[in-house]
Amino acid sequence: MEVITGRLKRDKRGLSNVIVVMLSLVLIVIIVSNVVLWSYQMSQLDLERMQENLAITDAKGVTRSSWFTTQNEFEISVGSRLSGTFMDTKTLGGSYETFIETVSDFSLLRISNNITIDLSTYPTRYIQGIEILTKYNITENGERWFLRAYNWTATSFSDAGFNNTDGSQPLSNEWNEYSISILDDWIDYVNPRGTLLVEFSDEGTTANQTITQMDFFSVRVMINGARFDLKNSGPMTAHIVAIWIVNSTNHQRYGTSFFINSGEEATYIRTDISLPQDKFVAKLVTEKGNVAIYS
Ligand SMILES: [Ca+2]
Ligand SMILES: [Ca+2]
Image 1 (cartoon, rainbow, N blue to C red):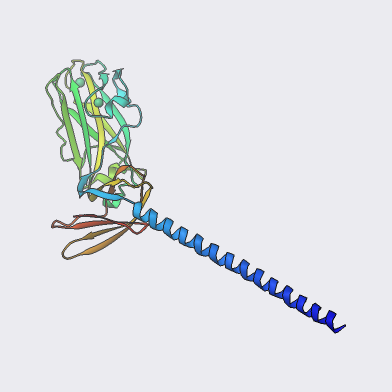
Image 2 (tube, helix red, strand yellow):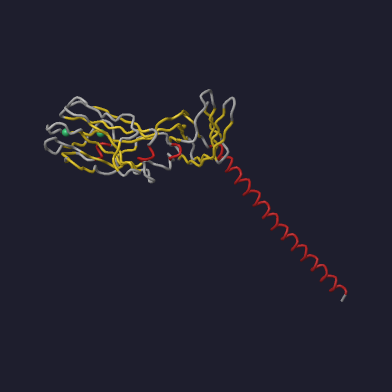
């Protein structure tokens, strides 16, 4: 009887030993797998950080936006279209759109178009003025040609505040660039959606029927900002989270969130950053913690 009880006790102890060993094994497996996974994730992060390759190829002050071009066909108040479409007026040079005057005692052409500025890139508080540029060619040279814009406050076309209200009188059959700028009152000409309505018309002093070839019809904004040309040579999208502008007297940080795809070049414009006149260093910090430096 004692022999049987002793064997039972030994069996119980043996069983509990086996259970302890198995539980320990399970614990060890859990711990080891977590450590392996964690170090794998860490090395993956390190690897991604090491592979990131963002460069600032240029950093400079910028005083003009890119051109905002026509997005719809011209509205023709007086005159008619002979050929082409508004698409031809989107780039300087190349193709053009052709209009002809309505014949009367004084033959006339009056066309207009809506052009919308991207206010998310160029917020109004950083806009210093507006520039309008046309490039055109006329068959008759006896009169002047004018640019006006719709004044949303006065609800009429106007050139109040334009730097030039005398119009342009080009030679016939020659390409002519005519630009005006609006400084003080520019906000009157931009509605809350960022739209300008720009009108092009003749003086209306001769009976000769003029044909007008419109090569370019665009608007841009005047700013005092910074432009960063970037290149991402890494295998992954880079996410820029901060910009530092550093010179001898000032260290200024600007928050941002700008993505640049793998293998791509991009231009990043900031209307709220005016670069120092003296020597400066620009640093872009990525989400992964890398810093691209331009000096
Ligand atoms: Ca005319
Ligand atoms: Ca053109």
